[in-house]
Amino acid sequence: MGKVQPAEWYNRYFKKKRDSYKRSPSESTVYALYRDSAEWAIKQNLPVVDVGCGPGLLYVELREKGFTGVYRGLDFSSEAMSIVESLKVAGDTKCELVKVDLETIKSFSPKRRSCFVVCETLEHLESDLDILAAIPVGSPVWFSVPDFDTASHVRKFASADEVMERYVKLFSVLVLDSVPIKIKGKVFHRYYVGVGVR
Ligand SMILES: C[S@@+](CC[C@H](N)C(=O)[O-])C[C@H]1O[C@@H](n2cnc3c(N)ncnc32)[C@H](O)[C@@H]1O
Image 1 (cartoon, rainbow, N blue to C red):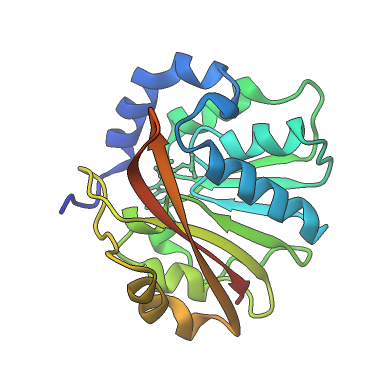
Image 2 (tube, protein in one colour):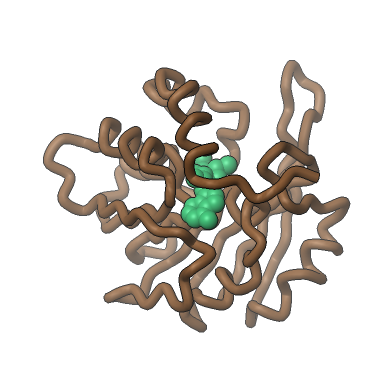
C-alpha cells in the first residue's frame, strides 16, 4: 500500500497538474464521481461541505449545474486551494475555502445544517473513521473509496461488503453502489460510493 503523504506532496502533485484543472470536470476519467456527487448534493438543498476538496472539481461541477448555495471546501494543500481560487466564478461570495489538516478535526460543526461530500479522500487518511464521526449526526453524506492502490492510498477495498463492514457503524442509513471507471471501454478501476445519513 501507499502511505500518508504530507501537504507538500499534494502541493507538488497539484502544481504539476495545475493546467489540467482548467478543463471541465466532464473531461476527467472519474467524472462520474463529480457528476453523481453534485447531483446528489443539489437534491439535498443544503450548504455543501467538500471534505478534502482538492482542486475543486466538485465546486466547478456544482456551479456548472446551477447550484447557487454555499460551497465550503476543506483541504490542507495550499496549491489545491489556489487552484480552486483560480476557478472561482467571479463575485462568488458563497465559495468558502478552509485550509485545515483533516486528521486534527474533532467536529465539523457547520453554522447551518449541511450535506457532506468526501470524494476520493478517506483512503488518504489514517483517521477516516474519526473524520466521518466528526460529521454531525443526522447530516446527509456522500463518500467514495477505491479498489486500487497509489502512493498516497493507505487502504483500498476488494468489495462493497468490506466498505460496509468498515463504515456502517457510523451511519443510521447507508447504501453502497459500485462505480466502474472505464478507459477506452475497459473497466480500469472501481469506486465504492456510499450514500447515507450520519
Ligand atoms: C485524491 S484528492 C481528492 C480531491 C477531491 N475530493 C477530488 O475528488 O477531486 C485527495 C485530497 O485529500 C487531501 N488531503 C489528504 N490528506 C489530508 C489531510 N490530512 N488534511 C486535509 N486534506 C488532506 C489532499 O490534499 C487532496 O486534495
